[in-house]
Length: 275
Image 1: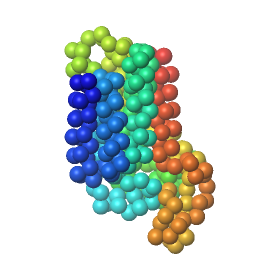
Image 2 (image 1 turned 180 degrees about the vertical axis):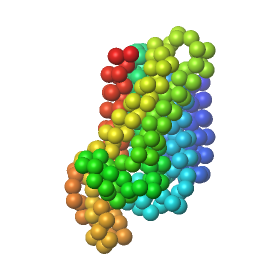
Image 3 (image 1 turned 90 degrees about the horizontal axis):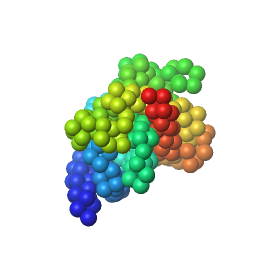
Image 4 (image 1 turned 60 degrees about the horizontal axis):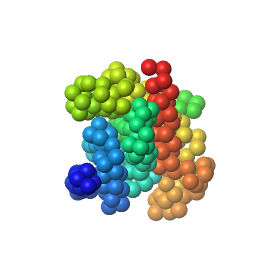
């Protein structure tokens, strides 16, 4: 019972602070409280702490040079203020892995979790930092120049940010494990060595982020504004209903994020088997 109280209080304080800073909507704050509480109860300090590292760094980056990124973000389906859909897309699978680990402890759960969190962190960093690139992005599908904000567009700055975002998750996961266990490999999570954790974060994050870009370019539902003619991720633009030009209606940005994070976790499981 004490874990439920601590998890709820900590999650509530963090979600409330994020809501006051407009990093979370009301639905996003509610979802964050649920996810955070469950992660604390069923997981341990490294599981909960890694989630918080992702949330804090991504929230800070979304506010960094926000005015400069505002024009590009007009084309996105979601903004820097996360709603419940974004919270669950980014943390929902990780929450299920945490529950699975509590029921059947195994290093695979931890490896997959690092891959998932590295993917969502790398993708967020790539979007927030890559959006500041002075050069136009290139399509991940054909390499051609595309307008800034185009789904599936990548830049060298974004790729570097993606790699850094994954590495930060790896470093955080290792540091939190070290703090909890004093450097001893005494837990199931600790079955992954420190350099293995860093490798999982770097590779899982970069690969998952690239998968996200590819899915965004090929599978994600896209619309064209009937007023300005822009290709956008949302169905309403210039106060007018936009025309769907490709993709299934269910393949939203949240769906793409969830699928790419799942595949990032799968990649890390495969990589773990080679370590």
